[in-house]
Image (cartoon, rainbow, N blue to C red; front, side):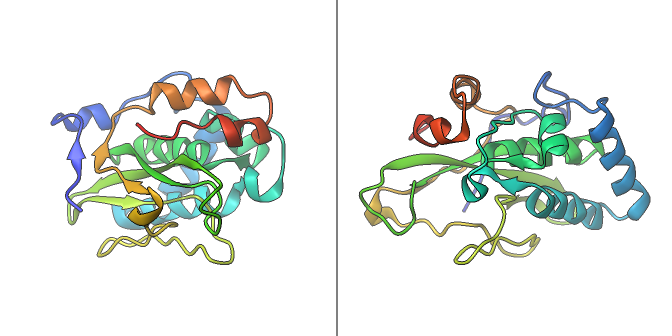
Length: 202
């Protein structure tokens, strides 16, 4: 898929977006330092940040944890978040180490095996590595039937898109999380409420 960048200015994919994307909070600073100390290679750093967001943070829909986390600090402290929150964390870590990162979305069935479950947005990221250009990665978190991986050569995302069910893969790489996504997260008292409040298209 040819990705459509919202901005041609690479710096627009590097900055903070308070309060969602901040580099100066305690847990975020600690993770950024850990990543920087682990490797000097940008690709290896990006992969480690991806693994942290994918594997160290539980997906709240999987665990049925009611907490709604939005910004990277809360995600790290609670080790919980849905796809959007995990994408916010990954963008924070990557931007914090100087790797341009944007926000991407797909439209998928709420339940992958139930065509009647309705559609909702799913959040993931695109990042820029000089050696490869822009690549998309999905830190959703794996489970039976979901096997997202960090790959610089081919996309290995959580969900294969099935147009027959109304699913859609948006090519946009946004500089900021979508406002309507943030509003839905803020307006939801629990992750169970957020499950149904997620927007269904961009």
